[in-house]
Amino acid sequence: LSMDRLTKRGIDKAFNDIMICLITFLAGTIVQLKDKALPNVA
Image 1: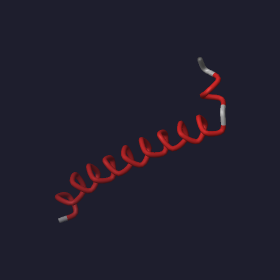
Image 2 (image 1 turned 90 degrees about the vertical axis):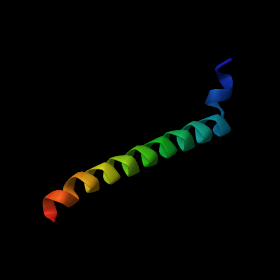
Image 3 (image 1 turned 30 degrees about the vertical axis):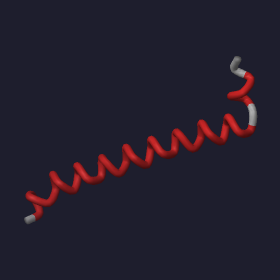
């Protein structure tokens, strides 16, 4: 059952999913930081 995850395609797909999650998380964090920082700067 888990052999498919060990294939090149399975590893690439898992890596892509992780990268998408990281990019989405970082983008959301940056937006929140900007929203919190702008009032303080202004």
